Each structure stands twice: as structure tokens, then as C-alpha cells.
Image (cartoon, rainbow, N blue to C red; front, side):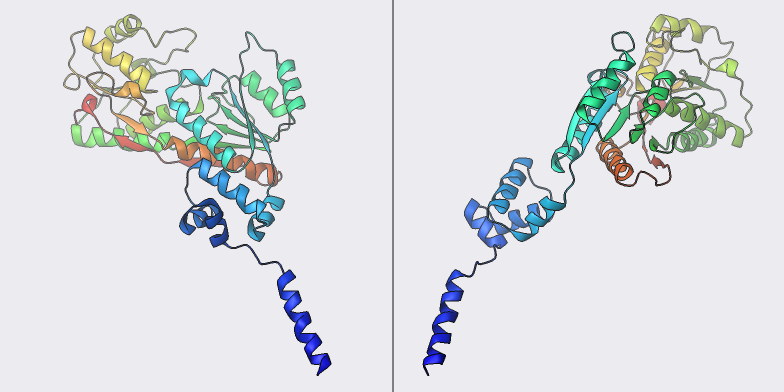
Length: 357
């Protein structure tokens, strides 16, 4: 009996000193939040970022086992969002940049923004910055200068490009590329205009050498014409380099359009900005849109809807594009020897007044 009594007393003492495992309910009660909210945070659900931070901090304080394992295993990366131009000037990229920043914040990566200008920044200074920051990977946006791309490749830092120079370039093994399915989208829509509207005369407006996306859009138009058996000559297009022709000048566009012997029935433009300028040029010439000529752009930026007629365009989910670029870069960092990837993201047609919706 004495031995049995001792065992019972010892068991009671052990239970008192035994540490109780922290539960989701414990965290919720400590913060005055619902168990559903805490569960969402701990399982990667969508909640406000401030709420996420508060819950994760409290979970760590209370030694919640799952979160401690996650914190121990989570890797920290330093990501550079690099641009060849100030991204604040490009409405298309604002949403994409926010998506990259938010994704990095959510996963506790450090993110740095840097805009390169050959006029004020030397390549040597960039090399020094990257070395001092210990950058693990780069998301490159609006980087179309071949010399600059050569420099980036020479750094041997994992890089994910959103778009790429339009000129021939030897792609590197430790880099990945994300593009929109521009050629396919333009080809399908031009074919529909040929079949359903009986259009035959098309004009591409833009420097297709500027970047790969412009090049793909031009190829999309040519592909549709070829498949439809419609002959086409580059003399019917406005393909000047951006350094030689001002695509933002209504007068310059008006003069070039006036030089055509026959007015094109549809102007396929490299982006919404050029499409808006072409529309203004046509209107200043007394032409009706879309009755005399149709206009289509690309990117679905605010300028496509800002004036009448609203411009037919193509939209890509820019938030998804930013998240995809960051995820692709992280994969490249963690698996540096994996095959180079070119990822195509579908875009959606937004048909508006400029093509006679």
C-alpha cells in the first residue's frame, strides 16, 4: 500500500508540471480573435497582413509547435526588383510591383527596388550595390537594353525576366522568362476580324524590335494574315525604331498615315498608349472610328478607356504575373540547375468601341 500511494502522488505531481500543448483556441482567446481567423492565418488563408503578423507573433510566444517548425524551416531571401526605367511612370507595372512586394512581405523575404539608367548609373556601381546587399535573386522588369542584359547575365545571380529584348539573344541557364501569350491572342482576334468583318488591310504600329512582347504581337498579326491567305508588306506598317520616330506624336502619326495610298482598315498597335495616339491622329484627319478604321491596343491600361472611343485591348492579370515571377525566381534560387523555363500567361480580349463592339 505505501508503494501504491507513492505512485499515485507522483503521477499527480507529474501532471501538474507537464506542459500543455498550445492550441488554436488558446491563441484565439489570447488575442480576442475567432478560432476561424487564427486557423486561416496558420493555414495560409487570406487575411489582412496586420492580423497575420499579430497571430504569428502570438503563436510563436505561446510556443505553438506548428508555427515554430515553420519559422525554423522558412528560408529568408533578399530579392531585387530591377527596372531599366522608373516603374512609377508605367501604370501597367504598378499592380505587378505591388504583387511582388506583398508576396515577399507575406513570406518574410526582403525586397529592394532599383531603377537603372545608363545616363546616371554605371554598371560597376550596380555590381557593388548587389554585392553589398547580398542579393539572392532578381526580378527584372522593363530591361530591354542588350548591353544591360549581358551585364546581368554575367552576374550569375538567379533572375526571372518579365518580358525580354526583342533582338536575338543567347539566354542563360540560370535565368527564366515570363511572357504573355500575345502572339496567340492577337492572331485569334485578327482572324476573327478577317472572317467576321471582312477586313483585309491591316497596319502594325510600333517598334517590334523594342521588346519580345511587341515582337510577338506583330507576329500574331502576320500569322493571322498568312493563315487567311492575305498578302502583306512591311511598307504597310509603321515599324520605325523608337529612337527614330515619335510614336507619341499625333502629328508624326498623322503624316505617316496620310502617306498610305489606301487607309488601313485596322491599326494593330504595340500597346494602349500608341493605340490612343493613332486614334487621335485618325480623328484629327476627320476619320471615323471604327467606321473608317479600327484601332486595337494591348495591356488594358487606364489610357485605353480615358477618352472616346474606348480602345479594344487585351488584359493580363498583373497581380498573378507578379506572384508568378516571384515564385519562379524562388524556384530558381532553390533549384539553380533546373531547366530554363519560358512561361506563357494567357491574356483576355476586351472588345470596345474602337473595333465596333
